[in-house]
Length: 251
Ligand SMILES: [Fe+2]
Ligand SMILES: [Fe+2]
Figure (cartoon, helix red, strand yellow):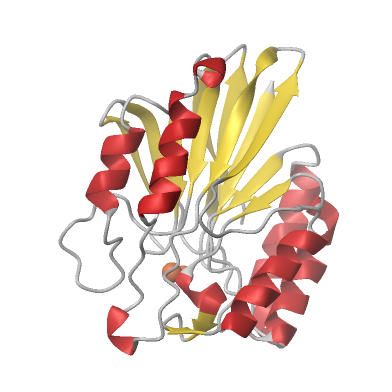
């Protein structure tokens, strides 16, 4: 059986004091779930500063080899809205330090997990929805972009991967069409593309936990609250390719 925990929005700050709740929860998760994979759906840090990324790497250290992350709007710029290339470089370095040799850009990031019960493999597909724009009037919005969508479509439609269970993760909300702040601008196109082609979708950004089942022919769509305040995390289990979701208290 493969077990995956979904976390989101840790928003690491520069000082130890400000990260107390988040690091305590990660320590608890590390002790209670020593073999689980972790997917963290963005806003890893609060403003993209170097010290914040260093705190994140220290806290993620015990999970190296089993942690998968994607960027949120706060990872790429101050206040989640002011894009900076330096912040992107720091995110890329964090990926590298966590053992990943790919960078987010126009290519989805794919990992295949296997065990004796899931010999066909579980495909994890990470997307970047963080906009690379310096316009403050973007209001923390997100976009997958046509090139990333096109490549995602090719991955989902590849006949060699059609029998695989697929979990797609990104930061912004994929079907809140009418939100002015922080909406994903091409959400309708993304959800149409994912419909009936993946089993699980994970996201964060709104700092609100929720779960939709069988929405748009996707078995589970899960949003996680921010790690600082949440008292619950969800576990996605894949046992002989049957997927189930459970909630666990973390304090
Ligand atoms: Fe956030
Ligand atoms: Fe966000």
